[in-house]
Image (cartoon, rainbow, N blue to C red; front, side):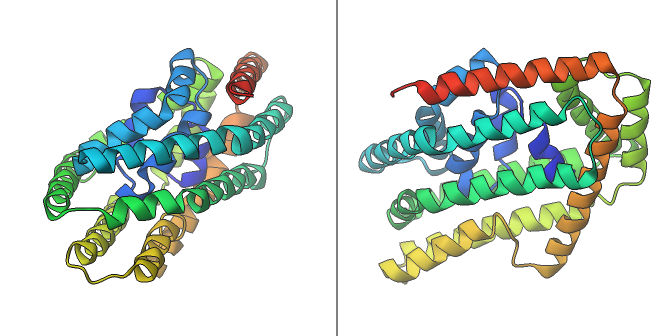
Length: 310
């Protein structure tokens, strides 16, 4: 599944958001959580956005087992980042939701779907830039025992990921992908019908999805993170060098340094844009009305969230 299609159906439960985040390397985890929760429309997710610093802290602590001083600094940094995000970024997401609502009654093109993904990628880049001081502080205070803990967590996650996406029959894996997509689409359009299911099945049958590519990229991100933190633990990086390393790590979440993976990612994005457009265009007026109503509700929720603290 390509990044654009996933972004377009990110209105998911908090539990699903947290599961999705495990595919990112540690350096971008707190950013992805905050970004994803912005686009979650249910009451539980509104509560989660308001408590995003605590949720982010809990998730990062599970990977690094933070000490008291580290934890206190991270909590302060996360609260600052969250306040900036609420004031500066949420209004931009409201604009995105308004645009989606205006597009919803009509058929859409793959290009329009891709433009949505590009817009959200820009928001993520802005968040990365703003979070750089917090990420730098987190990295430069990592201890040897925390590095070992992080490595174990990565290995545990990778084992589960292989079991779900690389082992078993191809039929089972395809069925799992179809169920994921159906669940996400039904959160926006209500119950899907035969035309939408036909689009999804055709897309999956002809998909260029390659679990090996996804796995290699995931492991590359993890290894890059571990290598950087190992240099920190060994005292090999001064602050300017570490800042450059952290910046490179965060940049690699948006554009992989592996040209082969970049080509694969581009192809999957285009595939996802086509699938999203075809799926939306196959919906009936009642399904589009459901989508419009939900987008309006998400927009209302986002406005309420943005108004907190003003």
